[in-house]
Length: 211
Image (cartoon, rainbow, N blue to C red; front, top):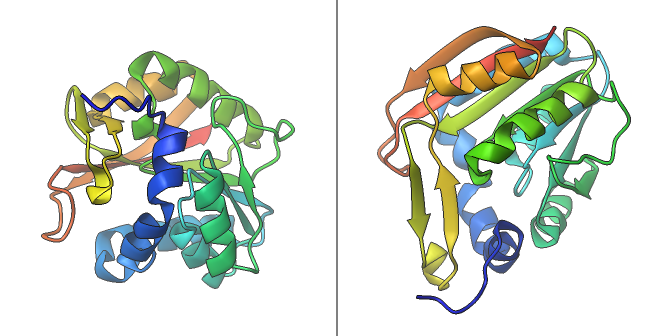
């Protein structure tokens, strides 16, 4: 067993450079994801500030910004925020925890969270969604991307660095239930098989909005 008491923050701090190099250009190979983001961008453009939550190196924020969306990014990892800022100097990025965001209520006209809620343990999800609900304006959209399935996955050697990473798998039905409990209305759920170059989990996407 790895003696290092890894947290998700410490793990991503350790692998931030490799993660950014691997994933910053990935949307170019993901037409399904781009289509969802195009629709999301068309809805929120010129409406106010949108948050890329769990932004990693800022590739989703970059895509939205290039669509003309006013966007910022938030990530738990300070090292990841640094890489995002270096790669996207025209986008503000902040260190923050989705379970307790340092933003006022109704701060955002939209939130996109691609593969960030998966790093919460199941009992933490309702609290996090309530916090997302708090910082969204009424009727504002929330777009989630998740690894689909049941249970959890764990690695002890992320990017060959001896770094532990845990991820929670969600079915669309399970996450839809959590969203309803937090006060969201679910507009759409979609799934796809993984692309050959991705981690081989089924992908789940949910579009909801604050009621």
